[in-house]
Image (cartoon, rainbow, N blue to C red; front, side, top):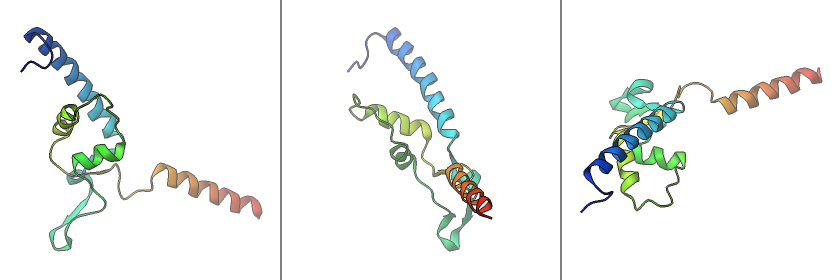
Length: 113
């Protein structure tokens, strides 16, 4: 069954999708990273030490909306990310929003003095 059209059209769309999925990987890399590179691992404690997700759960957490997808595109994207666990970038550090709230609270306490 042909999904796109001629073989040349398929190759053109495939190349465009390859660039697009590369951008998705780069964008995700700003917020998430592979757990193997960031989290401690202790088999006696159940594996990775920190919150982590598989590729499917990570994409769901991102909230990627593909309204015209019948599920095939989502599966391709999941395959691009690979079958491995992911976690927040710098998982043991304060998130940016937490850091800003903490800074604001310290400021408020400071000006009360």
